[in-house]
Image 1 (cartoon, helix red, strand yellow):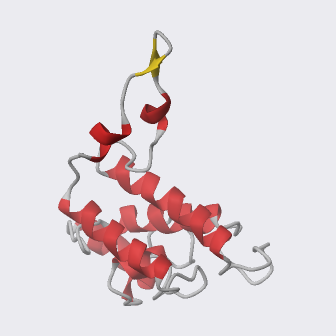
Image 2 (image 1 turned 90 degrees about the horizontal axis):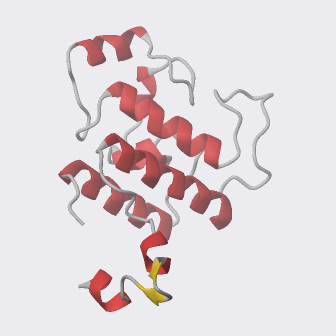
Length: 153
C-alpha cells in the first residue's frame, strides 16, 4: 500500500512508542502528537486547552503562515490529539474535573487510542486505513477473494 512520508514516519514513531511503553495520554511529550513531534512539548502552545480543536493565537499564526510540524499543520495536530484522547476515554478538552479512564496507561486504553490515531492519520492523507483487515474476509461464490500470501507480498 502506498503511503505518504509523513504518515509512514508517524506510524513508525507511534509503533515504537507503544511497544516501548512511551505512550502516555497525560504527558504532552509522550501522547500521540508528542511522539509524532519527536517528544517535544512545544506543540501544546498551539491550543489553550489540551484536547481542544480551537487554535490559540500562536496556533492561528502558525496555521495562517502555512507552517507544518513533521508534515502536519497545527489544526491537523489538534485533530489527532483530540481523537487520541477521546479514544483513550478522556472527556476533552482535558480538565481536572472531567472524567478520565481509571488506568490511562493500560495497554488496552493505549491500543484503542492508537487505532483511532492511525485511522485519522490515514484520513488526513487520503489513504485507506492501513489497519483495515476487511479484505481478508471478502468472498465471491463462497471463496476468499484475497489470499493472505498476496496481501503480504
